[in-house]
Length: 489
Ligand code: URA
Image (tube, rainbow, N blue to C red):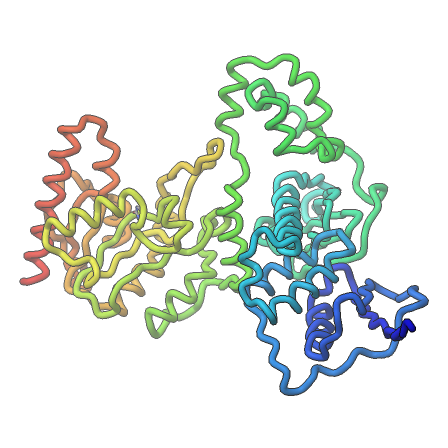
């Protein structure tokens, strides 16, 4: 005899395609009541499933532990933006399985994990593409100027991606219209709205013409290789890019000059960089310049994380604040974080940092008892192809960042500061000085702080003649020996 057990389906109604809080709440209730994945129907909006039980979901079962790794939550928040309707069930299935096997996510060959990885990658790629291919068209002029863009994402990424555009275009009023939702920024608040149709998007205008001219001048598909270009700029995006109308012609005739130009064109940041940047900013509030200095170094560091005192925060990955004991007797000041420091969030960890560490070692200074910082806390660079080329900060940027340097000095109260190069000297002294001439000298500031002047370690890295570089390095070691003696004095 076959016994049929009637199963009651549980229906979850999510208010939107990316309603993660509702998914999480429902998943918690269902999982703690051991409701199997197969018994759940996941709906967005009103239910039209005749077989679904519309009764409200069970309460979270008391005393049932549901420990979910943070990694899963972070990834689920991204995956919920995928357009596959099966994602809600997949996430729930993984959640249930994680209870039995907390290491499940590490099993790359597991079909559910594979699917999760695939969806997450697709969402991240879509986010990346939107950042690269959204083109604003100006509507209105002067005070009334507004910008609008039409974009067709594969996934429901508008809401997740909108804060990026707010940060990039804070001073503009703009709307991004997509068939998967809209984002509008009025200069003060962000509104996420329902899907739009292409007819809502503005028609081509002069801005687009300008863009066409620009593109004709710099684009060279011969260099890009059509396959590589399509991978980066898939054909489906072409129809919304004004410049794409030119692509077939450009593929036919490209010359060497244009080839060199395209090499200098900025490309997208490496996905890893974009990921670090996104993670950093999703946890930060932008801080307008605080009125009063911080009461402690930790507070100053926290405030500096959201600093917008100059425009360098826009492209940098994160603020790189100083590091070291808060009662250090010596403070080293460099110029600005480089590519590696920008990603790591720590000063002097890249190639110049290696020279610096080795030289300190040779001179008998333990870096761990020193405080190391930079005159400018954000990486300034120029994108060239896939590389980010260091760009010297200007006086305005250095002076804007003195707000932080002076707080570091004031809170640490060191006996000695070392200016590593001209930018550091400008920051520490408030005026430009000839570093090569004054190298090895100690200048005393009005507040009594002694400042030792020397070169920046990256100067040694830029010398191509080996013997010259070696000689310069020896001089730098001598400078550091002098610094050690001053520390002891
Ligand atoms: N150069 C600097 O001036 N600072 C760093 O942190 C790295 C390179």
